[in-house]
Image (tube, rainbow, N blue to C red; front, side, top):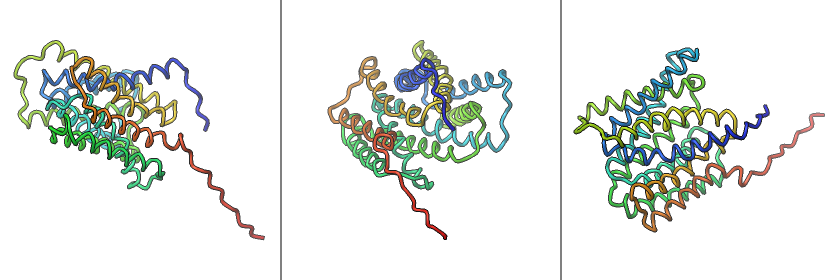
Length: 305
């Protein structure tokens, strides 16, 4: 089936949303965790975003999903948002710079490639070259500088990235609610689990969040969750997967520049090199089959006469 080219302005708006809004969420998290306990903030972000999105969908006339599809979406939400994004929030609360966190999260497509192989999906040599380059980038990033002095922060983000990658691959092979309803269930499930974890771990607000903390949370709820998810759903319906997932290697650059420009963060020469290597690796994995397409395989048809 041929895919009709989307209108230019909606396409540019959706790409801008994912490139810059999702890239800026790392900085927003960095600001927010100065006022909020990490799991409490992440839980409120996803729970309130899920309530807003679910209310919108119900008012639009959509029906609640069945138990099986909803349960699958809840598990995907826990893997992606509770563990994946929650790990970033906790790591930034432990003073891991937002730009470095974004670079580590950019390795998600690399781990997703490995899980795709385990699930029997075809892979190509250029994608494995990207995997190797990504591992080099991770080693460079962890061998000195910010993450070198915070191994627990590095491990937390790495576990979150692996969880996000597994949830993404597994989620593409199971039954989920249709359209944006899947995102609403994922957000709600992640929010509930994170808030429960916040209570069990004894997180408490020492003081009322200041204005910047409230604005950061509001930005993460409205822009980082509700609007960005809608933009992503638009892209995966209207453009190729390579274009839709291209945010993965643009977000780290946006996050690094925002962290340097507004949060006083800095990168060592080795970390700048690691950034470049990881971005190259993700480009190879994400766009490799488009940059270097494989040769068509021609099968001979045997004659039976």
